[in-house]
Amino acid sequence: MIFVIAGKELRSLFASPLAWLVLTVVQVILGYGFLKRLDDFLQIQSQLAQLASPPGVTELIAAPNFATAAAVFLFAIPLLAMRMIAEERRNQTLTFLLSAPVSTTEIVIGKYLGLMFFLSIIISLVVIMPLTLAAHTHLDFGMLATLTLALLLLAAGFAAVSLYASSLTAHPMAAALIGFGILLAMLFAGEATGDSLRARGWHVAAAFTQVFTPLKNFEPLGRGVVDSYAITCSVLLATGFIIMAIRRLDSQRLRG
Amino acid sequence: MHSPEQSQLLMESTEPALTICARGLSRRFGNHLAVKPLDLDVRRGEVLGLLGPNGAGKTTTMQMLTGNLAPTAGAIRICDIDLLENPVMAKARIGYLPETPPLYKELTVVEYLRLAARLHKVPRAECSGAVNSAMARCGLTDTGRKLIGTLSKGFQQRVGIAQAIVHDPDVIILDEPTVGLDPNQILEIRALIRELGDKRSVILSTHILPEVEAICTRVQIMHHGEIVFSDTIAGLRDFQSGRMVSVTLQRPPAIDTLRDIPGVAAVEAVGEGRFRLQFAAGADPTSTLINRASDGDWGLQQLTPTQSSLEDVFVRLTKKEPVA
Image 1 (cartoon, rainbow over the protein chains, first blue to last red):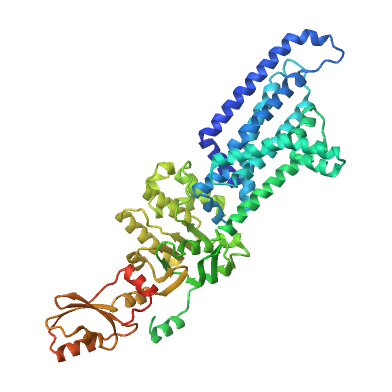
Image 2: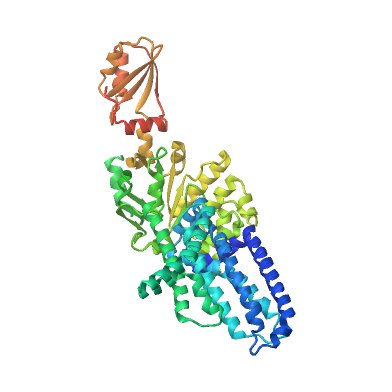
C-alpha cells in the first residue's frame, strides 16, 4: 500500500511543472559549479603537484559540489513537498486517501518515500557528475560514498520537516514558507544553542540539540568521516518529523 | 409507520444482513452539537435516503460512517466489523463519494480508478477488470484516456461515483450524488444508484424530496442534527398525502364550523369558497367532511389531497403540529 501511494505521489510530482523546473534549475546550478571547479582545478594542478600530500579531485571538485547541492536543497525541498498534504487538503482529495483502507502512517510514509525517490534522482545526478571524471583520473570512491550518504541523510531530514510543514496547513505556499522557516531556524539557532548549552556544561542537552542541526550532521560525512552520532541524529530528525506529520493527520480525524 | 400486519410480514421474512449499524452516534464541534445521538441501520438491498436542509448534519454523519471523522460518542459496525476498532478492515467494505468528488485532476480516468482499486486492496491481477466494469457502469468507457481535469462537471461526478464502486463494496455512501448534473445525467445516475442498491447497501444524502422518492427504499429526515422522521418511502407518502386537502364549497359555512370537524387541525381560507384543511396527525376526517358537507348543503365541488413539498414536510416535522 505504501508503494501505491509513493507511486501516486511520484506521478503527481512529474505531472506538475514545478518538479521539472526544480530539476532543471538544480542541474544548471550544480552543472555550472562543477565545470567552474574543474576549470580552477586544471589551472592550479601544477602547483598542487608540488605539495607533499595534495588534495585530490574528489576533495576539491566533488565535495564542494555536494555542499552546493545541500544549500540548494534548503530551498528546493520545501517547494517540492509543499503540495503533498496541503494541496490535497485544499482540493479535498485527502478524503480519498483517508476513506481508503490504509492507515495514516501508510499515507504519510508513502508520500515521504515518493518524495525521497524524487530527491534520489537529483542526488544521483550530483553523484554522476564527478563519476564522469573516473576514466581520466583517480577518484576517492570512499569519500564519494560518504558524500552521497551525507546528502541523502540531509535530504531525508529536510523532506521530513517539509512534509510536516505541509501537514499543518491547506495552503501550499504557506507550507513551503513554514518548511523553509523551520529549516532556517535550525540552521541559525541550532548550533548556537548547542554551543551555549555546552558552555554551561549541559552536555546531554547539547548532544540532544545536535538532532536539530542538519548541516552540522552533514559536515563530518562531507569530509569523509563516518560519524555514527551525526548519522543517528540525522535519522532521528527525519523520524521525529515523520511521526509528527502522522500525528497531525490523525488529529484531523478527531478535530474535524 | 406500517400497519401491524406489515410489520409482522417484515419480521417473518428472512431479513437480509445488516451492513451498517450505528448506535448512539454523535458529534460535537466545540460547544456545538452537530449530530445528536442517533441510531442508524441499513440492510443489504436497501437504499437509505438522508434528507435534510443544509447544515442538518447529513455530511457530518456520513463522514463518521466512512471513518473520516471520529464520533464524539457511539459505535459503528460495518458488515459486523467495528469501524473505530478496526478501521482498515471496515473501510475496505465502504465506497464513499464526498460532497466534493476527491479527484486528482492530473491523472487520467483509468490511472485514477486503478489507483482507487489498488488502494482498496483489489488484487493487482483483477484491477483492470474492476476498473473496466466500474467505467462501463458509470458510462465512462470512452473517456478512460482523458485527464480528469479536462472533463465536464457531470463526467467528473461519474468518475467520483466510479471510484466509490470500483472495489465492489458492500456499503456505498454518496453525499449529494446528483448535485450539479443536468436532468438527463440525473436520471442516469439515479438508475445507476437503484441498480447498485439491489445487492448492496446505499446511503445517499440529498435535499431534493422527489429524488428520495425516485431512488430510496427508506428515508430518514435530519434537522438540526436530529433524525426527525424515519420510515419507508410508503410511510413518507402517507405522511405527505392526505394530510392536507383543498376543498371548494359553493355555499361555505363559517370557518369555525370547518375547524370544529374532529380531526381537522387547521383551516385556511384561500378565497372564493376554497379552503385548505390540515388534518391532525394520524386522523383522516375526509368522510366526516363529506357527510357534513352534504348534510349542511355546502355544495361540495372539489376535494383534492395536496402533495406537500419538502418544505411543508420540514415545517411540519420541525415546528411540531400546528395547534388548531
